[in-house]
Image (cartoon, rainbow over all chains, first blue to last red; front, side):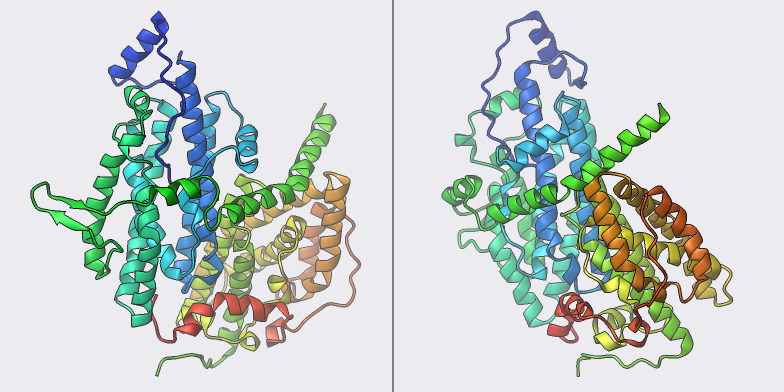
Length: 324
Length: 235
């Protein structure tokens, strides 16, 4: 579903070797870097971290929406939601594969997630409390994800860029589906409209946080920009999202939970109030409404699946012995 | 006045469609409960696929009754459901889920194969699509059952337990097919899985008449909550 703008911890590996120069020249020429090509270690590490965080986000992201599959209010909605959550699992799968091309195994990455060492998008640490949350996630969370991910279709690392093309195509379908749920609710009964408004109130600010810390605090994105892993700053993408989304919310007849939101006629941009970055940091550090639940659910699925995976390996080994 | 219940004129045709549709919906619902919790990511995708097929089959069958699909799914009470009891049993562990999927799909596949030549054009059309899907469900579940039965001591024990628990519920699902033909599909897979085929004895029944297990009420309470809580609302 989603990649969170990252605060890259690695400082630029300012390799002054001829390899590094050639590498940067290829990037500058908009060439794609492929798995077997030479690349700076820091580039590899940055990508492994970003792609695996993205993959983890897809897998953890199955949980909040999965929470409503059994309660979807019509069979059409049930099938659409199930298919959407399945798509997210699929995204996780090919993102893990893209990360594996960089020389790391899926098992290793899964361990990092389950032990709490790896991050996933903080947005999934918020609960889905009503059916309108399913509409809102599609509309806003997937909408924000698309803003983040469309530039990644031109990411310098080939396997990631190619995966993103397919992911973005599916995400924009999910986004339209989510908006259509919201439209139905907003044109429905007063209770349904209230449900939609409540969901927007809860999700709006966390969605703005999805683009990551403000540029003033995101000192490391320079390296990612130079490597063309990242093409726009966090704030630029956030503004783009707000500009695209506010008119959509107005069309629904909903009110954004921001008294400072107003259109700046001169620039044509929607100006918005101050994001609560303390909340962002708190949730990122593990203290959000569902951090513990989400990680526990993944750990439980993994632990309870251990005997199944062991059985599959044992059977395969027996088959091999028979064939030998 | 918003509708909160539905009265159905259960002709024999409608009754048989409801039995098939309810089997698919309820088993689809159970299968969908695995989403986010499966033993591997690949299996997440496979189980979601199977659940989607089953829900799709249920929708086509409901639509063919002439009643609104959502009214049938969301506004009937447990005694109006015609599914076999085996479909509504809780998922249990992965072995139970797989063993049930195998036993049920093996019967469904036989049924759909026969129904492809049905004189009822709706049934024949649904069967043509459902048979392809169900054949895959049989294959997928059989492959897993073999892995589990022939895997480790623990997986073997779990698979055998599942099979023993499920066997008395298989009478209902083979009532509309030839049980011998069903056994001919099931037995070789059990043999390859090194699982003992339970003895043919007393069988549970009642689902087709609306006499269900304790589990269906809970399942429907969850599934139906929104349309029941907001009568008449469109979603």
